[in-house]
Image (tube, rainbow, N blue to C red; front, side, top):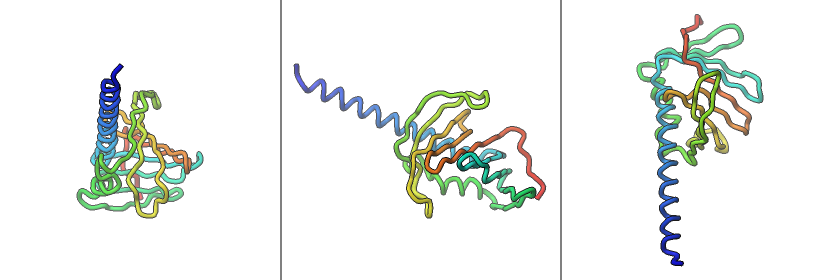
Length: 162
């Protein structure tokens, strides 16, 4: 049996895998890009099971909960989208993107993707992250080290009173 068909098949498989990963990276990047442009969202960040941050974004204002009160930061016109774009400039800034498969999160159908984000100043070692995407928006992001769980909600979000 000739080795040429086996080598050609292996090359085709590797080429298809690379294309699938590139498309997976595009899906993840597009979801984060959409997060920067959606009208409003609420986000909670937990470390090792304890909520350490609650934030609300409405337009280009970002609200952060401090104890029982809220503080507000005006990001300026287009500021939230620009901030998100700085964190994930595009699909080519992501590494090792893989579609994990379907899942249901709080009754919502989603698709899970694993990826490694681009380096950020002061962020330390880059670790694999998982994101749940539904209707083009991220619903949840997790990492194992440190054990981080970020939840994002889009329904009935209004600006709090600082």
